[in-house]
Length: 290
Image 1: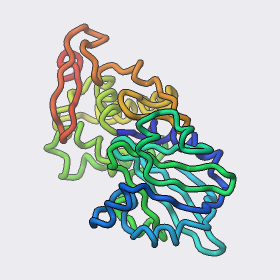
Image 2 (image 1 turned 180 degrees about the vertical axis):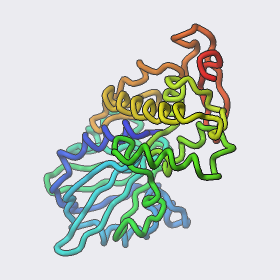
Image 3 (image 1 turned 60 degrees about the vertical axis):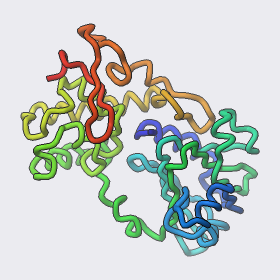
Image 4 (image 1 turned 90 degrees about the horizontal axis):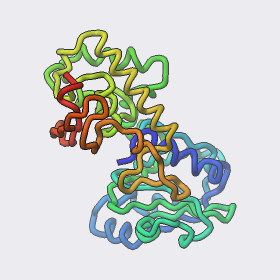
């Protein structure tokens, strides 16, 4: 699943081509149309397809940003402003091309689901191999309450104090620390890969209960989460399975992972173990992480 670093690179890749452009037409794939006809929320969530088109076509994308693992498009038409909020799900991606054939990854070229035709003759294409992603068109963030619950960006000044305050709440005190830092209300944008890596750098076993961490361990873990997210951005994200940049290229963070999907620990040489925590496979070194 694309996490903060991957979504950051997708956002950077499409922004120069779409900011300031008018959306002239929105085209949906047969799978999206069939899903809606069957009452399913396939990719386009919260609105009927014709309503989505009405609130999107003719609008200009006046800004675009990443928030946690979401890409946010701010659009306007005369005096009316709306917001497109997109989550890439497990294997979604945006591409900017002249024509569909220019998407150089066959699976993404085949599994396109939404095309935004722009007035600069470019196509902004949303592709999703597994169809777990989503695009919403809302009048304001108030229409998507869970979005408002997202923690401050981990690079913001207030992010540490926000994170530390969660240790005083009863919700996670008796649950694994790995489960806690995966909650985007606690730390914004930290997914499974980067949580595993941060816990390794901090020397903390992912199954330890949150209440067992001392103050120094809590702070240290936050700084390592931020560090691995920064590294992920530096190396273009982690391309282990489906993730691609907006131009179809891959990231290289997978070359710098210590425990995630690794066989042996790069520090002590012992075998890396896995344990399911919060429905996710946690990779850790039982010797280096206590």
